[in-house]
Length: 302
Image 1 (cartoon, rainbow, N blue to C red):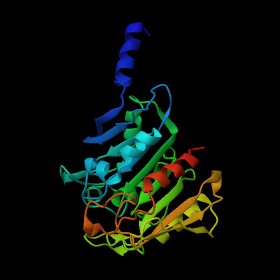
Image 2 (image 1 turned 90 degrees about the vertical axis):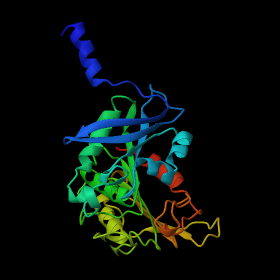
Image 3 (image 1 turned 135 degrees about the vertical axis):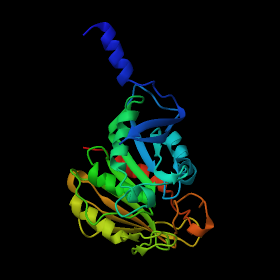
């Protein structure tokens, strides 16, 4: 191969490197144009493999909404990880969803392959940023949290650990190729994705699995102990919520499953102001961003 041909190949397969800041990326998946947002923290060093957190928005929202809803850019800047906000699909430009199994809306009805979309995102970002393939994590709210569970099951070769928020499993079972640690945040007063499962307020047609179903499935899949260590977390703020941490440990490859149960909490992101009062209370006694990042650091891919 001549030097000329080598340079052509490098041009094709190596995209322009990303610098600190916010970027929009476009790609084609199954003939459909898709996009995602990327936040590169100020301390990013292109010579050092950097962890990635995928952050999936809820049903009826979009990637830009998720930036504000989660507050993850701030945590990204503090901790030094890259955060990616994928965009779902839908009939309207800013009203989007992901296909997580039994939810939700356009993406589910049209059998959109959001597992493949996520795979393509990771392939694409790898061309422009130095990512740590052993430290790729996923979080999301509601429909986005449901997708996290599906990714853990079907993309366990790429996803190290997940942190669903107010989003239970969207499937009856899970069959990961490797154990995947889970930290799940859910309010007991969540009316949109009920803690005990069933139909949610404002959700047409979705009969949600319970949080218990989600936790039990992954305790079994990871080979964790069935009896959790239960810890009532300090009540730092009198906001009508209390938080209990239930940890199922001793899983394969040191995996664990953790439930952060928020008594009185709604369909919200712990530690962040709710975007709508109708979503219920958002506890100030914990920060989901702090706890999930601490959890992610403990559970890179083996």
